[in-house]
Image (cartoon, rainbow, N blue to C red; front, side, top):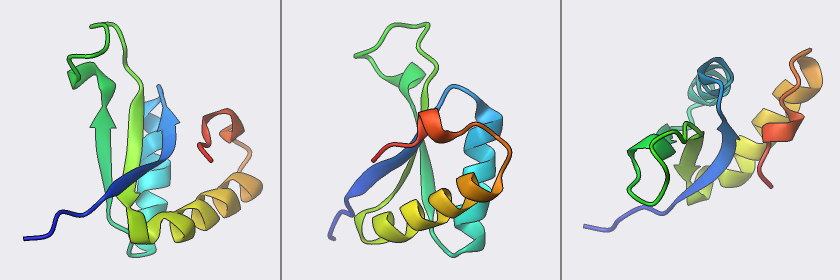
Amino acid sequence: MERETRVSVFESEKPSEIQLIKARLDANNITSFLNDKYMSFTTTPTANTIKLMVNLQDEQRAFDIIDELIMKSDLDLTANLKN
């Protein structure tokens, strides 16, 4: 069984931002996954940054969708975009 490579396309400490982006990706048939650094043994227990991950083959489409959402939104998500 081949394991899929996942890459981070968005990162935030605000769950509402993550949910907004995740919902938009889901609506465009891009499966996304949450990676909560709090669960990692390599970070401090107070770390609460959440990464939104997608499969490598969906990376460019995900960035395009996120860029479009940021341009149309009044939310300040630009600081959280990972390029």
